[in-house]
Every structure is written in C-alpha cells, then in structure tokens.
Length: 100
Image (tube, rainbow, N blue to C red; front, side, top):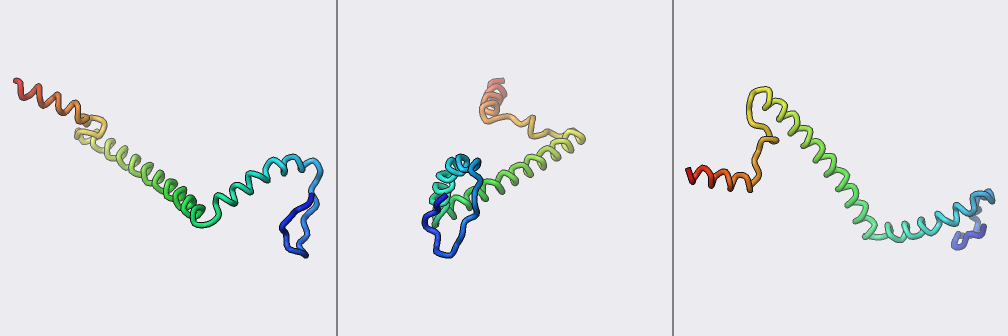
C-alpha cells in the first residue's frame, strides 16, 4: 500500500491483504467526509447536529412534563391537553352556540 502525501520519516503500519478491498471501499468516504467537515462549513454542520440533538432532548422532556400534568389533571378532574379542541372545532362549536 502506497500512501501519498505523508511527510518523510512517518511509517505506515503493514495492512493485511485481506483488508485491502475494505480499505479501498472506505477510503473515498473518509476523504469526502474530511472535505465536507473541513473549514467553517464543517463547524456549522457539527453545531447544527449538536443543536438538533439537544432540541430533541428538550422536546422529549417537555412531552414528559405534559404527560405528568395530564395525569395530575385527570386525577383532580381538570381538562387535559388531550381534551383540547383544535381551532376548527372551536369555530364550529362557537357557531352552534351562537345559533341557539
């Protein structure tokens, strides 16, 4: 295996011939990944992925909080978030009330 672009004095480890086809398949992906993640654009992508991860954690936490509140509201006989009407139902229910 000949590695181009290495400074002189750096030796590469010998690779088993059985792994060479796998390395030939993976190497283009790593080179494209290094180009994609290089520079400011790569930092932007990484920050975007981190932001998505933490926002999903926040959404899950808020859903758990809403579930806990729904359980408490059902216990005390209060309306829950499952019983809320959508805007379309509110419009039609207000029309029915005004016609009476």
